[in-house]
Length: 127
Image (tube, rainbow, N blue to C red; front, side, top):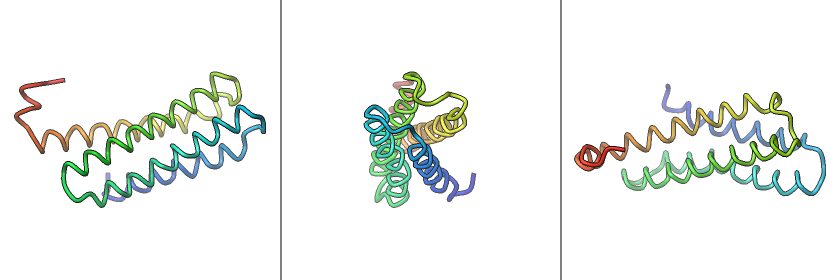
């Protein structure tokens, strides 16, 4: 994976969610969930940009954790839309898959960074 790929993927994820939200049926439920999803999904890319500017390994890991939380939250809101029958799974399955892949990349990156920061603690306390 090229160095700029995660930055572009996280940005594209947010853009795809924006398009989804704009296509949602207009009702109180989708309005509330849509706002939450819009906030968390666009935060994935914005916070990943902050990761790229981390000032230390600890800062890098802390910022990655924020991206992880926002990505996981985005997946939650997508699941809520599907499970409440506001969106058909077939319409968002690829978007959810991309969110899960981004989440896996972020989790793996944070784990690697933690191990490089303190390899002895990871060996002594395996997860």
